[in-house]
Image 1 (cartoon, rainbow, N blue to C red):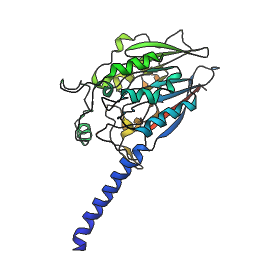
Image 2 (image 1 turned 180 degrees about the vertical axis):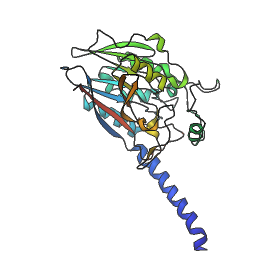
Image 3 (image 1 turned 90 degrees about the horizontal axis):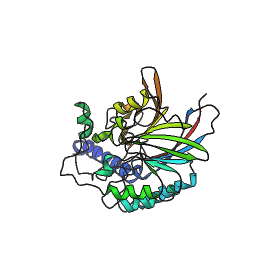
Image 4 (image 1 turned 30 degrees about the horizontal axis):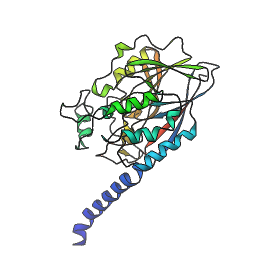
Length: 308
């Protein structure tokens, strides 16, 4: 009897322990990732950029709110929010409260699909099956018409009132202590809202430095930014794979980016041009899959320094 049931019970116990760890501990084990990126023109002073992504706020997530509020103590030069702030139709006030201290700094933002649309309960394994079929989450298509909308306008109005730049398929400029930073942003490629034709021309020639900003790092967008000569692209969306295998890494990216670049700093090359790409693993999860494994939630502090 013991031999017959011992192995299945052991597997079940290990699975339960893993679920408890990934949902109860790691998904709430917030980290700050520090990255140095050599992209600035020679002689320019370093810039400290705080990238916040994939908060996926659910009403009542007090620990996440307090942690985000505490990041203002880092005193970055400016903040970039790469989208998916919501995972709850009631979450807008709590996102604005959590980011309130950071909105005292110059900043800019783009939205992701979860800012526009409420999440639905589904099978998390679908991402593995879609990868095998060459698909990627929504596969670049908008959700069905019966999907609930999130009150994203309240989020937009709160960010705009704080002076953050809305980079939805447009350009903007931040001035930080005499330094002019050109920003070119796109709406979310994951649901085909990106319109690169509205932001042609490459980096702002009048700015001291320029970068591209987008939620989901689809290759068509990375190709366009890189081909136009942007030295740095910031993105989120992937959750760093969310459920990773130790010493192996991510299984999926939920877009057509390869898993080797699912999070952190890498490069993207088109012909003879190369851009730095930074993908944030984000600090939240979909409310229906509140687990992370070997991929803790994070916010990134990027120190931009002069090229060597």
